[in-house]
Length: 77
Image (cartoon, rainbow, N blue to C red; front, side):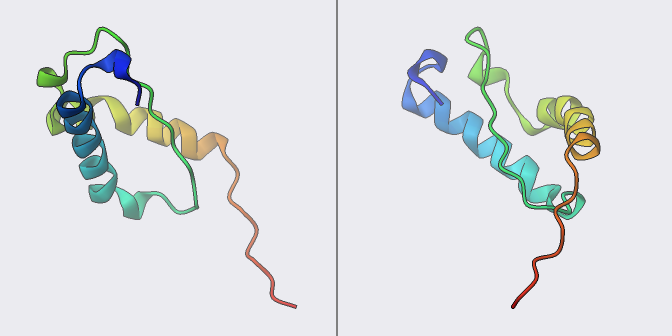
């Protein structure tokens, strides 16, 4: 997350809330994914809470899981 979002305290608050969301929903993600979240510049970190993330992210996560194919099982030689 860049400094465009605010000082470290604000950036870390957004990170904590996002990590908490993904921790609570990790059983819904059935494949290894790297997800990059880029917040908008005008985002007020004080307004970011778990309720807001719970409202916005499930639809994005569902769409992402639908579009990204599941990886083939890893075969050992």
